[in-house]
Length: 375
Image (cartoon, rainbow, N blue to C red; front, side, top):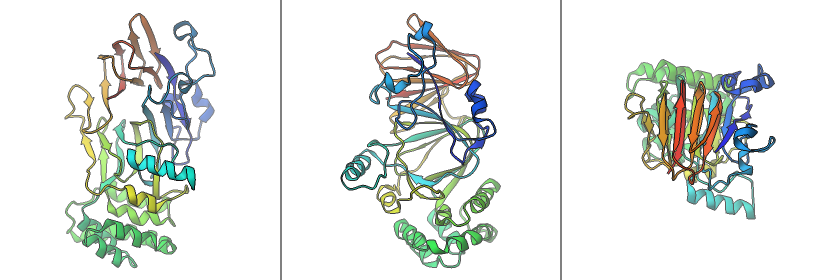
């Protein structure tokens, strides 16, 4: 077993002091700064530091989990995520596309992916969490888009259920991005007031569009957001995104579990590089997002169909069987993890990594821990 802390990412979209409950003494280092993500894993973009507990682990300071475990041994990456403004409209590649793009960029560039692996993820809400996820019904998307002057042809493509052409037509008008941004909030309100949408928009949804228009007033990606559906996850709810499902997390604090990859193909709402053509090749127009509501999960288990991992929410005690990589993150209060005669105590914001070859693990917490288990 390895006791680890999180690797902090202070991206500008983070919540000021948003990760402070999980940073312990390190909170002072990031005081009054945006705090976006806290990573637990071996990914080279942010490997987790080992907590110096020489009496129980025998490890030395100044090492991280990647110094001791390979990606094959630790195939899961977990994050606490705190979003104060919309993240980029993005999509993740499947295994085949990731390998293809990775090989291509080794030969001719540009640098598009950070690793050659598939990325699929679960977001588990720790507080109400707003997100654009998956595809909005095409008729509703078209009705919003056609209310923006200059996007009538894109709306026609949507009516014909041709998402690719619609996206291409929108991004080709990037010189008009600021004009589209000014029109979007009123287009959203007008579509709502018309009463012909298949699903009426929530106030959170309308507010999300207004927030995105305020934060990205000249980004053409804003005009793509009406193509995406919207959800507010209640605390304890989760959503699983298979590769190819577009999304943009809007606002809230959640816990993410994913395959150990940081591959992101962005379509907009970002100052980072955007690769529209590459994103279009990996978009999935048929696979829906999977929602797992807290009230429906059995005994705290979150088991998305087709995923390479599952989650176990632990409020008191649990046993995790040997044979799989297990990552136990203390989210509310401390957690104690025992394997055989060894016991590690993780404070809130720390985690314990257990490789497949180690025996059954006994978990005990007076608060809440979440275990991510590889399949």
